[in-house]
Image 1 (cartoon, rainbow, N blue to C red):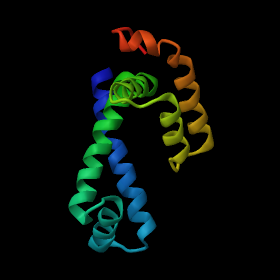
Image 2: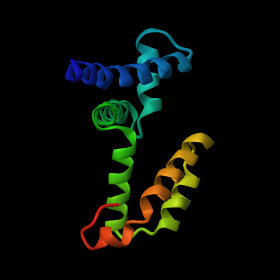
Image 3: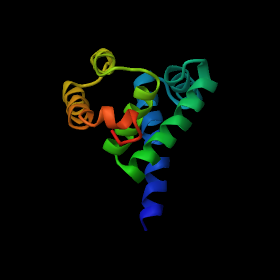
Length: 125
């Protein structure tokens, strides 16, 4: 049952994104789909289709593992690439996301950062 629900979520989120984009275009029919895909993606319709696929993968991962675990793993990779706590906080502040999500990301970062030195030596973040 859990696997079925996660597949539905993975298919459902890109569909919702496309539906919202279609509604925002003000067009109907094929013109609405074309305009929506162009608006979603970085390189026209093809980019829009790729973006919807990426949204599907991300939403499936979130439904399977949970947002917090994925965020912590992303932070681990950023630390491996030489990012500091300050640089990660600057990135979070620069994103065009809600204040509540920024606060949640900062909270998770603060809760997990204490183990950073152990992480560099093979511990966990």
